[in-house]
Image 1 (spheres, rainbow, N blue to C red):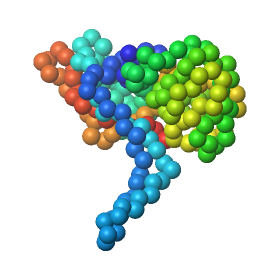
Image 2: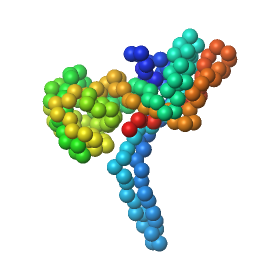
Image 3: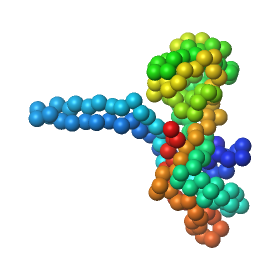
Image 4: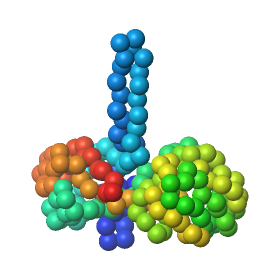
Length: 196
C-alpha cells in the first residue's frame, strides 16, 4: 500500500486519483517567427497529489504527524510505483549499483531479472528518488532519470513497494483535522513534495 509512512508502516493510504509529477524548471521563449527556444535546469523533484483514505480509529496518528511536522519538517511516504512497471518486474534479487555523479546510467551487479522502465528506485547512500529510464535485464547498464546526484559504489537500492521518499507537505495542505461526518477524518487532496 502506498501512503504516509510512519512507525514502520503506512498510517494513511493514498486513494485515487493520484498524480506523480516530475517538476523540472524550464525557461521557454518564442521568437518573432514563433520558433520556441527552451532550456531546462538540472534540478528535479517528484510531486504527488492525492487524496488520503478516510480514517477513523487511526486518525490520531496522521493528525499528530501533520501537526508536529507542519509544512517545514519532513515526512516519509511510500512512493507509488507505476502499475505497468509492477506487473513487468521479474527481479527478486538485491542488486547493487555503481556510477558517478552526473551520469545518466549506473552499472548493476547481482540482478537476476527485469527491472522495467518507469520503476522508482532509491539508493541506500542518499535520499533522492530516481526513475529507471529503460528496461534493464540482468547485470547491465541501468539508465536513470534524473542524472545521478552523488557517486554510488556497489550501493544497494530499493525498487519494489519499499521505496520511501522523504517529503514535505505543500503549504496548501491542511495540517490539522477535517471531519466529514464527525467520525471519519478526511483531508481532501494533499500535495506532497520530494524534500531535496
